[in-house]
Image 1 (cartoon, rainbow, N blue to C red):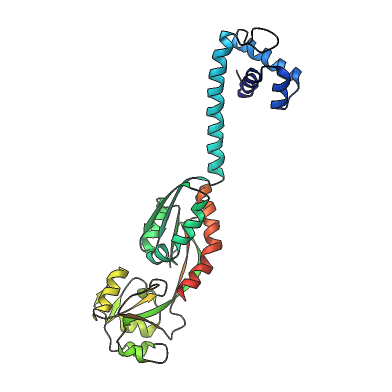
Image 2 (tube, rainbow, N blue to C red; image 1 turned 90 degrees about the vertical axis):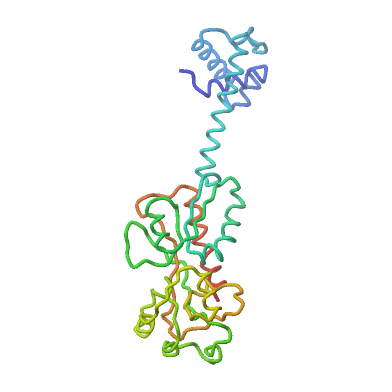
Length: 296
C-alpha cells in the first residue's frame, strides 16, 4: 500500500531536484529519503527518476508527480476542514430564542462571536419558550434561550439572568401618576390583557385578577398596540419592552417576586458540535452582564 507520506517525500524530492534539500525540507535523513523512494518505486513497479541524481523524472515519475500533488492537496484540504470544524471555525449553528433575547441580546453577541468565524452558517428562530424547548429537544436547534420550564424532560436549563416584570399601560393612564411601584390591588378595576409571560406569575392576588381577564395575546407587537389603543393593560418582562414604544409607559411592580428567569436550553443526552460548544461558552460568559444592562 502506498502511504501518503511516501508520496509527500517523492513530490518534495521531485520539486527540490536533489535528495539533500528534500531531506532538509521533510525533516529526515538523506538515507531515509532514498529508502522511501526505493520502496515507492518497488510498490509502483518502475523507476521514478532517470538517474540517481534525482533531477530528472521518468514518464512514470511525471505522472506520479501530478497525481501525487493532487492527492496531497486533497488530503491537506480535508485535514484543514476537520481541524477548522474541531476548532469551531466552520460548521452550522442553529439557535432558538424567545423574541426579547433574539431582538435585544443576541445581535451583539452573535456579531462578536461570528467575527472570527465568518464561515459558520447560522440559523436563528424567534419563537416562544415552549417552542424553544421543543426545537432543542427534537434536535432542530442546537441551543435555545428561553424562560425556565416547570417540567424537566430531556433538556437542561442553565440560568443566565433574571428579568423583572413591568406593567405596560398608556402613558396618560392614572397609574402613571403614582409615586410608587404598582401593587396588585391597584389593578382591581382595570382591563388586564394576559400573555405567556404574565401567566407564569404565581401571586394569589394577581391570579385572582387575571382570572377575570377575557383577552389573551401572545405577540408582543400586538400587545403593545392594544395597550396603546387603550384596550387594556398588560404585564411584560422589562427586556421585552427595551427601546422606545411611543404612547405607552412601563411601570415598576411592587411584588419583588414578579420576574422571569431566562437561561440556556440544551439537550442532556447529546454532546454539542464544536461550534455550538464554542458559542455556548461564549454566551454563558457574555450574556448575563449584557442582559442586565439592557433590562434596567
